[in-house]
Amino acid sequence: MARNRRVLLLPGDGIGPEVVGQARRVLEGLGTGFEIEEGQVGGASIDAHGTPLTDATLARAKAADAVLLGAVGGPKWDKLDFANKPERGLLRLRKELDLFANLRPAICFAALVEASTLKPEVVGGLDIMIVRELTGGVYFGQPRGIETLANGERRGVNTQVYTTSEIRRVAAVAFELARKRGRKVCSADKANVMESGVLWREEVQKLHDETYGDVELGHMYADNCAMQLVRDPKQFDVIVTDNLFGDILSDEAGMLTGSLGMLPSASLGAADASGFRRALYEPVHGSAPDIAGREIANPIAAILSLAMMLRYSLDMAAAADHLESAVRRVLDGGARTADIMGPGKVQVSTARMGDLVMGELTKQAA
Ligand code: NAD
Image (cartoon, rainbow, N blue to C red; front, side, top):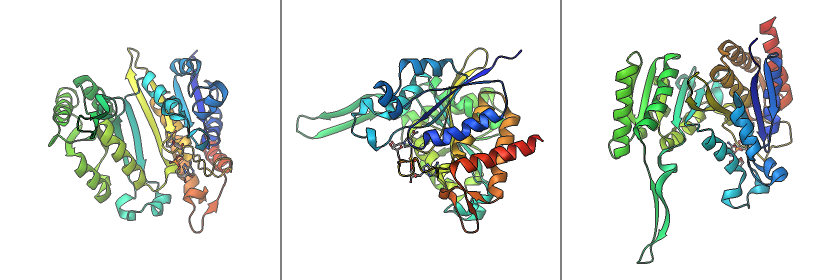
């Protein structure tokens, strides 16, 4: 008999518990075969244990098949020093699980095409995936710091640094994804002005030529990529890029679709000998303290993050497809949480949106 899959839910702060609560209902609705656990992270963990991530919770995350996180942070913990803030819990989780590949899909649902600031013909049917390197580059490179020079001036330093293996492992994730999608990868760098960019470009090309000749590979300077994303985003299938450029380009791509409440993400680690990868799934949005506790948050980003978990960690691609199409049909039917509300649509609460998605899933199963 197949063993149960262990899923750890870390709802976190603000609207985190509200939206993860709906994702949990959907997961439970998928039937048996899951061992669902819950833990604390961020401000919730600070309040309970005095630290944003306990060693015990980290150990549970390491032992799980996959982790679904809500969001962390909020005004209550804003005055804590940097090392003790809720966000440190999330950063530690990403670092300890060695989650080096961040996947951010940008999909424009037909029913929400009007929510984008771009013209419907530019974004309608958009389905792209940004793969951002998450554990290297300028956010981690040494030396770093702020120093005072002999003349009294201050100098801030960060170092952009990548090794061959760091580039190859994230590029491999992008090529593998492309094989299951449109077989097209665009690698974005600044090889025109940065040596680390020259290395990035050479290594991505080399890996392609060695192993992924069946995937079309193009290279683009990251600034041009930023322009192309708003000019003609549908030219892309998978974009792979480093930590810094990926931070910016993935936010830009996400916003093409119009709403923060709709954007899921996945962060993946290296595959072991059996093919298993550690993975953390989370909505892109934060804890939204301005609407927390009002039952109006959009749970779709969390539910679509669960769909990514089914696809990438639990080997349940068909269930992921069903879940994504259930969400699409709910939107086609006109239900909207407040953040995506439009003329002639029906405004629903967080829980009601969960009900409707579950209802569509049940209809498909019948
Ligand atoms: P935010 O994403 O929490 O909110 C930005 C705006 O979008 C708010 O007006 C909010 O109401 C709205 N919004 C966000 N998610 C929504 C949803 N699901 N449904 C409806 N509306 C939604 O960003 P912020 O306001 O800059 O940050 C708030 C807190 O969240 C801060 O403490 C920040 O550090 C933290 N944060 C955490 C994460 C994370 O956990 N990954 C990410 C970003 C921000």
